Image 1 (cartoon, one colour):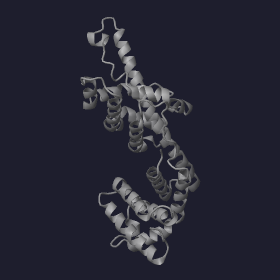
Image 2 (cartoon, one colour; image 1 turned 120 degrees about the vertical axis):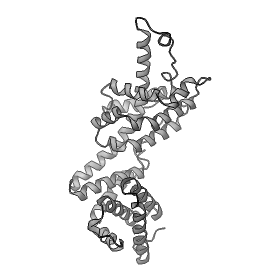
Image 3 (cartoon, helix red, strand yellow; image 1 turned 30 degrees about the vertical axis):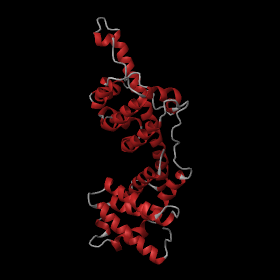
Image 4 (cartoon, helix red, strand yellow; image 1 turned 135 degrees about the horizontal axis):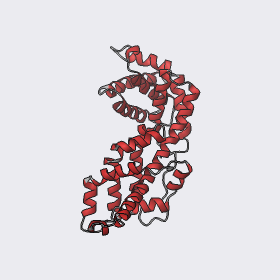
Length: 307
């Protein structure tokens, strides 16, 4: 589940903290490991949220039926959302709830958060369309609804943001990225599957090692790369360059130089994308230009020989 893009993001964040002087090396090592674990915890928590929000909706409908004088709508509610099979599959055919229980991720029942999420969900066009469609919803319809909920609601709910901030460090920062992994997991669900096999913590066996080695190369070789960046940055003095710009280029150069199995263009493209998200509007083009110059120089000098 935790792929190399997320590893690059988290590594760059820790290199930034280290270069600011806010953490020592050992603390950064611990923080990197904890940050990666937190990403996987959030993945499971968001999948469990499908079950919990559905459970809360069922509870609302049952409460409505038990009122002293329930309305017709409360006596005979539309249960399409409450009965969705995506939630049932995750609850009964995966280990998500067990994982969350083991890691104490669901040790509270935040009524206000679930109510806030449901209110926002029920205002979406996707929900209204789902509840009103003429034919009974298919499993694919239910999957589509949840994917739209994650795209439109999960990333934009104040109560959920507050809950995530209280539960785990890093969760707020990781939400948008992990949401994409959850959507991929929903996409892969098959109605007739006997078991829901979710992604392991790391997409590749050596990714934990990749994360630590990338971080160590970046901080150990930072001075060398800063000098190269300054040399190739026309009209820019290295000391006046924004720190995150430098961090992204330093981490990129550490990867390009030290990881022979990763093609140069892949590394460059990944860090240019990071620059688009974490730096000023024109930084990506600047980063591309600097990295391109240094890579050409390294290839000419035989520092790197890979594609």
